[in-house]
Image 1 (cartoon, one colour):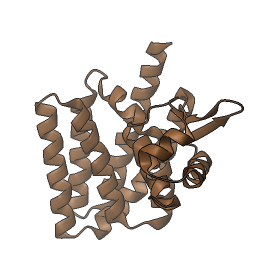
Image 2: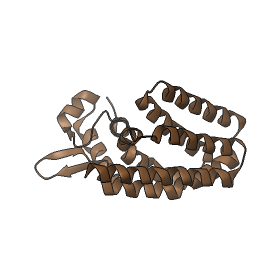
Image 3: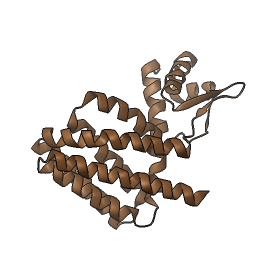
Image 4: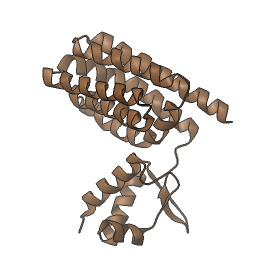
Length: 212
């Protein structure tokens, strides 16, 4: 039987990956049976996820996966735009040969997914590249904040990739980031990440305008 922390991690991962979708109801009894966890463990896990902004509780209606509004999605990306250039800077300072090999491998995978028009796996590769940079940077404070932000914004990634020309631009921007990190050029890495995320914010704003 899963303990409270295992239950929390499992549910959090399901929300992050989209297995549990925005607005999906989270019934304690069903989750308890599905996870093989006690009702108390599920209840505690949902409370923790509510504190992170991933779950919301409604009076007489129970818990559900919280839908991030369009305005909040942009705010999340704006905060990422402030923090992830710091990550890129420190990644360029700290990256070992093994780290660079991992980054290059992830970037190669993204190019393969792009060539195959596999946008879902490309989006997964995009997330993996950013997570790899976070690991390499070893900046604990930024990592802690970004972990929550990525959880909340991941559901917008695939929609954004459908924007005309966004895949090609995204790939070029990620190449520039990886190149700067690999060459040990922290200021260039910082600027490349800033430019990348600024363009992502612009793309998301344009998508939202077209949908209204």
